[in-house]
Length: 395
Image (cartoon, rainbow, N blue to C red):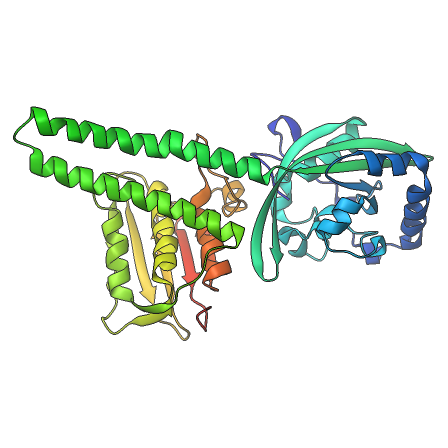
């Protein structure tokens, strides 16, 4: 589970107590957890909390282990009985991808320092009061990566000698997606339309520029259409309604289209885009539009991260399998950025509606095309994003 710039309140870096990192099976008091779970569900106050609160509700013990949950949470996780949930840490229970990165589970992965849910829980335990927050939960379900955004609230609850925590998660994914869509129209679309209006205005006032104005207007209109089509494609992919249309793609022609996307005004201005041309015989089976979207986002992200005068390099590597595309830029990511680079709506740049590019390349490249999108970044080496094609094209 991840949040904004920091999971801790006030923007402070989240410090996770090491005792929270022990695995459930390593603890000698597992039976006590189940006993506490039994007492919790039999307690009238706990039952009232579970029945009255809207959203996904779980009750945690001092070690952040689940001892009770409401029916809405059980239904969302497709669990027939609460026994399968008892003793799990919240991230493990919800299926967070970071919870499986270490044997210690939720709270032990590097990305956990940015988790809004974990920050709210620990702050509530420390200050013995309610703490709100937001988190973006990345999960894999049926081999597909999904992003869910929640408004969270952690509240202390005393049960005898035990200090429990009530964690409530309200799904705000639809609201976040609507905000992104609105921001796209108010920012990206408006900026391009203003450029179109400026150039079209020269047609009637300056007889010496009609050819250049026409070219600029055409380029801007094409850019606007590509952006809107790309965002629609991503939203359909998240909704599960976007189909894959396989076809034979000539790699050289595909990369030529990518290069053409960044000619003229835009993120490539003042930067050099080097595309290493593969042999004409290089061909792959994939969806050409989805591949172009993934590669376009990879290049756009690299250009935006490259200072003026810098160079972005794009290559095709046949390798032992179907092949891979790589995009390199000279800059290195700070660790806090690298930990969250594929998180939906996360961006190092100000303004709403940002951060969809890296998320989109992950969703489209892996969920729909069946490949693998990853990166490495280090000072002196720069940042290399890689898209490995699947061994068999996904229908």
